[in-house]
Amino acid sequence: MTEPILVLVANAGDGSISTFRLSGGVLEQLAVTEGLNGCSTFAVDSARDLVFAGVKGQPAGIVTLKLDRGTGRLEQVSRLDLPGGGMNYLALTREGKGLLGASYGGGYGITARVTEGVVGQPVSQITFPNLHSVLPSADGRFAYFVSLGADLLAQYAIDDDFGLAPLEPETVGAPEGSGPRHLVLNEAQDAVYVLTEFSGELLRYVRDVRTGLLELKDAAPVFDPSKGLTHSRFGADPRAEHLIWGADLHFGGQGRWLWATERTESTLGAASVSDNGSLAAPTGFTITETQPRGFAISPDGAYLVAAGERSTDVALYAVDEDRLDLLQRAETGHGANWVRFV
Image (cartoon, rainbow, N blue to C red; front, side):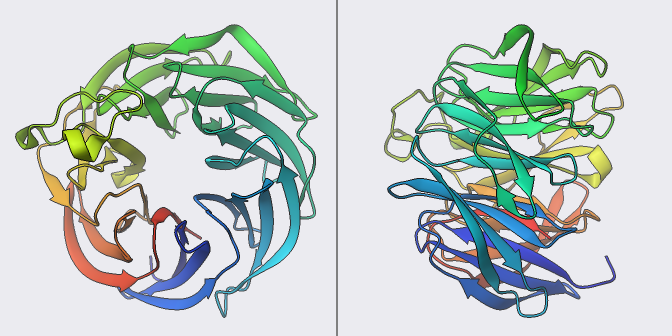
């Protein structure tokens, strides 16, 4: 990564998004955009410099913002109200023409058209308890929603009008009580990996690239076994009971590693991904910002930026395979929980 790149961080506690410039291994804060109540997710259309941010409130909504790359400021373009509840995960598809969303509190997922930065009314809506994330396939033909409350992934085809058509079967299960949370697809699009919140595992689903169907294949733990953590459950307080509390995951090392966070012990660890897609548990862990809900890895894989819900800083690391070297900590805001490179 030879050119400067921007990093956006959502600070849910402050209702803001911080914009940083990363250049030469140094983070420089450019701006803080406020007025984004409870923002804990956003999706970025880098080609158009648009940011779609989920906000809380009465009603909750999705705010479209225009990014000024020179100043780092975000200016509101439009807003879609969501009376059913705020989004916990947003993802774009088909070169920014469609938006997918998952609402944990509302228990519903949506698809919507995006026209010149304006998010239209939902085209389709599905319902499952405690939906935590959603991602499309790279070709925009399929969508996968993760239900933490029902221990499942819901799988759909996306039609030309961004409507959802359930596959057969509509859902594929996760281990009972595991609490599936976030997902990623590999570059070949023949595998989906899901991080579980309660059991701290990475689940591997093999994917049929033609039909879009998923099949659970195997799993590997991604929490630090030396810390004495035990299996969590819905409604428990992980900090009070010292329970597993998985959060976010992203690919690194050109798909050779899957990085994941665990919030009770504030760790980052990387599971290795073999040529056939199978996983091996991390061999080491890095203690990072307190209660790390979100992080991101630079497009070239050289840097990782982690945010903690109980920290007002983000941490910048140099990445060397499955090891991290702390370069800098930079002030961001309260309740930092979502990070994206732009």
